[in-house]
Image: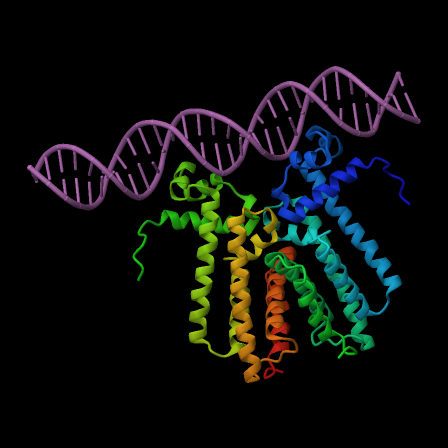
Length: 197
Length: 197
DNA sequence: TGTAGTCTACCTTCTAGTAGGTAGGCAGCG
DNA sequence: CGCTGCCTACCTACTAGAAGGTAGACTACA
């Protein structure tokens, strides 16, 4: 659709930055690291992203955009709240199991938020607010339809669910066991979904 | 009791390092940063901790030791499983609300685990294993006594609880709202504790 | 011809870490 | 007592390398 950029070096840089950030956070990589993995010189990265802040800001902005469009598309294909939660959790379970994206970029950046450049911190906050808002909507609909069993306000259930997902990513990483995430999320989902008993 | 060290500079260094790590992770601070806040020269830090790995390794080891003794003491004073969970959650709620320790050192380090020096990564893993083991024991006793309502195996409930706690820390940080942690944990505890309805 | 993309070569600042030295405390011993 | 020697804690001054970033030239291609 958007015919902005036929050049894919910028995308390669963003992809490399993403995997470095997912591995070690904002201060865990350098332009030299990116340059090496994509076979380019440091200075060429500055051509695409004048500063590191520009680079990561772009990455976070796009990450949120992708989440927004992804959730919208997900809701078109899968309208049932229980199935939405299952699909969302299943997405991350898959990413962790095949090691393709073993952590959420914004969850990782949030952990070092006080030390982040303010522009990036703002982007990370925006992601959390979007995700929380989307989940709150899912819980509201599920509660209204009776397809989700909740005992607190939808907003609070949404925050608790999001927290469990992020914490489960952390545990999976700490244990080095890709199945930990699913082990935690499966019963969490079961408690929320009355039909599957 | 233990008459090991009258010198408190080493402890000052560890305390400064802890607050820097909590703020920005392993790569988010330097010896120069620590030197400045405690009013000492960089080289003097190397006298106490020859390398940065030594410093953080010591910090993580002591963090685990403190957790072990802290949990043991907690169990002596508060033997009931529901109250143990409440006290544990309350401890972090307090730390976050008064900003004294707004994040768990090992939870933060776990997020950047793939980029950590292996000695430190091992220490972080040990902390997760201890905490998970302790919580599993609490859930086992609570389930046996009927004082905790669980629907999955104690080990799994323990992992889910730990994940929610860590994720709630992350959300509190992302929103910059110290009350978020309690907002998430309160209903999570209520679901586990049958008496309080 | 212009411009997007890359390069080499460089700069400045920060990094962890080292070298070598000083000041004071506290042995042990004549 | 006073002297020697060692130890802890700290210092100044330095290093090599990595960090983010810049300047300017080359190339390819529309």
